[in-house]
Length: 164
Image (cartoon, rainbow, N blue to C red; front, side, top):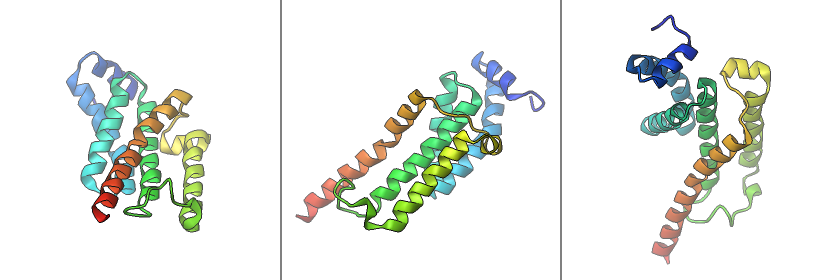
C-alpha cells in the first residue's frame, strides 16, 4: 500500500479496506499529532484530540487535506481559548480586560494572522498541506473549540463558590 496515493487509499478505506485505512492514518497522524502536541504540551490530550478531529473529518467523507486542515485549525483555536482561560483561575474571561496582558493579546493577534496565512496563502498551504476552510467548517471549528471555554468557566464558577 505504500506506493498508493492518498486519494486511492481514501477510496479503499471508505469501501471498508482496513489496511488502507490504517495506512492513511499512519501517513497523516504524525503530522497532525506533532502540531497538536506542540500546542497542548500534553501527550495524551494531543493524541486524543488529533485522533478525534482527524478521524471525524475523514470519516465524514471530506478529502484528506480538509480533514488535516480542520484538525490543525481546531488545535490552534483550542489553544487560543485556553490561553485566555489561563489568565485567572477564578475570574471569568468575560469579566477580564483582554488588554490586561498586552503581550498575550498581541501574540494572539499575530498567531491568528499566522493561522489565516497557513490556510489562505498558497505557498504556506503547500508547506503545511492545508486548504481554505468553508464558512460551515469555520462554524464547526468554532462550536467545537468553544467547549473549552464552557468547561473552564464551569470550573471557575465552582472554584468561586468554594472560596466564598
